[in-house]
Length: 478
Ligand SMILES: Cc1ncc(C[n+]2csc(CCOP(=O)(O)OP(=O)(O)O)c2C)c(N)n1
Image 1 (tube, rainbow, N blue to C red):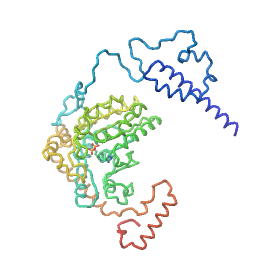
Image 2: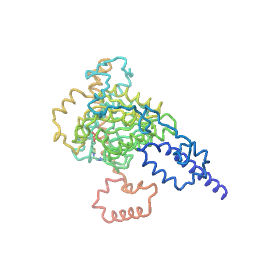
Image 3: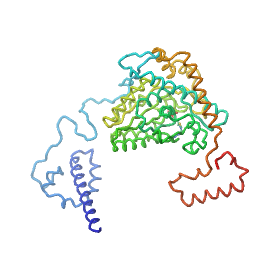
Image 4: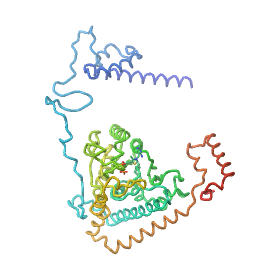
């Protein structure tokens, strides 16, 4: 036992020593570059503890690229080529013209579209030729999400639920992207992506249960409404702090890469969230770790009351991708076919080449930010109306289907009734359910409940025994 441990330690020591030797060689390669002087000083300090002469022979030292010794008679080797910069931190040519790169030098990245606002495919070779069943499923999904939004929005206005966020105008980004990936690809969302979960078969009852925080809620009523999550649907639970899901999603993508089963991650976020530090960390980690992740930005023009011109001065979010070394594309988010094509291709790049991809879907937030917001305070009602009437993903998809003779007024009417019936039935069912047992407030803080938490739970139990008439205890499961 002892011998084995000793051998292991010796092996570890050799590993550390050989790593230090490699570091020494690398640092000496940088020696002639004054820019790297500070790095070198740090590395030298680091090396002071390692007796290099004991691991490298003088001959090895001489050929290792070490700085020429003052006593050496051999001529220094010029490792720098004449006309190409050799800086390890960039790949570029020399220039003798002093010129700052101005953002104005670049045209905006174009917006990829497949169909125009009349639902007509512009370039037939770009039509993904989705089957009638698939387009109908997408259309029905978008419309039923819209119905659910209306009911839950109203429900909040009446004080039946505490909070809600609608998805109005962004339905195309949800269904177009969700339909283009595999159902077991892992989703990390922000909060305005309910359609992705709906596409995967998360039932209306479950959406309602989460918003009502009733005993059917998978999250046991602990989070604010719209913070959905479902392990069965590979949809990681939403949390409120913006962009925190982004580096987490990269970590998950890296794990999927190691698992090597051809799965990837899709991570949704808004253009406002993209200003968070976590967004930069995520993009850079994903690029340097070659993580198979699709970053899907919903650029809907606003982050609550902040318009995009106060959010950034560059060319949106897509232009940041290449700076991180990430293939990037901008797409019309109100064109479900364009979103589908872009996401499908992104997935191939992601999985086949094991690298991240960035999609920026241009859209417009037709609804208020949330039920806590009145957007007429910072944008005109006419502006909203304009988008609602002239460029809505639902009406555009409907027009596409009508051109194909897949949909008509009669079908629309009967589907609307059916959708309303389904939503109202889930709604009345959710209202009837009890809230979870109050004890669920204490469970899952840790995997096992620590003693001090058990004590607190017992205190509450005694308190409720004494004062139960002051609590709505009958609304909770016993
Ligand atoms: C770290 C953090 N800062 C601020 C907030 C408050 N907040 C919630 S949503 C939001 C705007 C996000 O806008 P965007 O990312 O564009 O998404 P959208 O709401 O437009 O879909 C802000 C600032 C938060 N939740 N987390």
